[in-house]
Image (tube, rainbow, N blue to C red; front, side, top):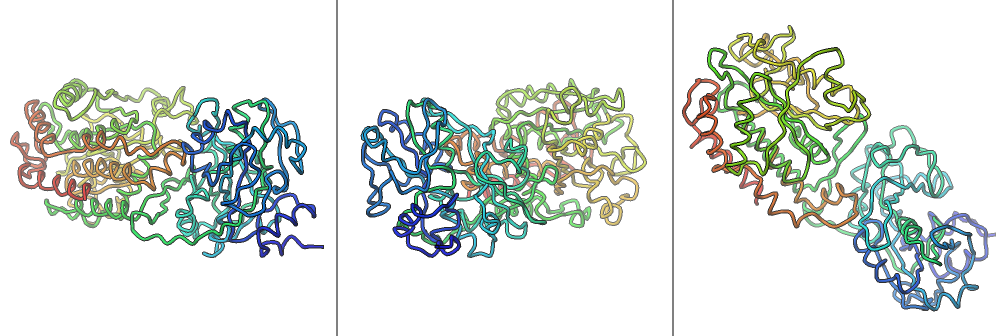
Length: 615
């Protein structure tokens, strides 16, 4: 008797013969180093549309070979093969329903004369690459088939082929996540890099112990659930088209080819993926190229200069801009707040640091087709409405941004504002951003940099950030330049130690991500630039769209036009001056922000950010 554990070293042509002679449930872990293929066999009238469907969803359906009608062989993949017998088991589908399993398709030879076979590379093909970097293959260890799940992710539809993505799940130790991604990202014919890492609920998978195909695979302590697009998506496509007759391999019973998996050498930083955790509840990791990550880190360095010599270098936390931007890139709906009424003796009391940065972020979010709204103080609604209207006229925004206000009316007001019917399971927003927004200190008051209490001018928008901490999937970002801004609670100890009056003015409310800038507007500009960089990063784009559909780079010019520019910001600053909004430090109505002249300090900073973006 041949032991299945030794089959991994057999040559493919021997395995294709052997699997007909012994009882096996699947061939996972066999034919190590050789490509394996999922199989879909359809009537020739459907073949062209199915091929288009494969190309439109090539992460799940990387096409290796398409046969001619009635051709049972695939000479470019293997010699002497016969698709009627060389899979361990087949499934038959009639009008979209699975009507049985077969060991051979020979009895359907007459029907197969009018049918076309598609061979799609399988994730079993990358097992050796994963093992070579020290990652255990849990389902092989557990002597079972890989877990496969239907998701809530729709594939790109082509004619009658319309289904959701199917994924495989492989447990990977957290310390090996990046190694797993780098080992598979270059193997595009074998599904390439993962399409999700973390909580399965984000894919619409409710219970890992109940796979739709294959067997449950148990995670070890410290393992993260990692999901790859799966060729069984082709089975779901067959079901969706309701063809009178179709065949597929049974999940886990793929066709073994004679093609070796070539080792892929990643040559440039544009092709090297990095993995970053962007949420703990629910657990969620994102992916970006090393090149894009480095650009965003450079942006963070540029905005971290301290022209006011306030000591903000001590507040800096590395990679906060990168993680915040990654989280925003995954967001569907974003709420922005700004407004610091530092000039309490003037009307309006707002300073001009904050609104330009907030609108720069809003403009990019609009270009990325995300929902965006702004929440501000009730007393400042008319002012902000006028600023937004004029920002549209000036070309800063493509369309008006909904303007909201928040007042505390009950203990549940914040939850009711953020979620439909106050239900934490149905949030209206999945990311909140504060840019130069007055933040509540430990004593419940709000202070400007000179320790003046301005609480009477500030609505309790901090409560939204506090409530967001209790809502799974809602992340927050705070942008500030002095430590008394909303979200700076994450660095409050450093504020108290290093910032003038910090023991009194330090904001006590934390954000998940804290971006510290020399001027808060700069933080907003940097977020907009970072979102552009991520959107033009092929690795990140593929991860965002779950490897279905087509790259979004055709929209690049739209994104480019949404970037902040010296001209836009000059026009916006003039608008603020016309409405009596003053510079932070000096209360001046000149072209300056935080006492720094626009035409030197700020314009030069914007130009440096744009140079980095466009390199």
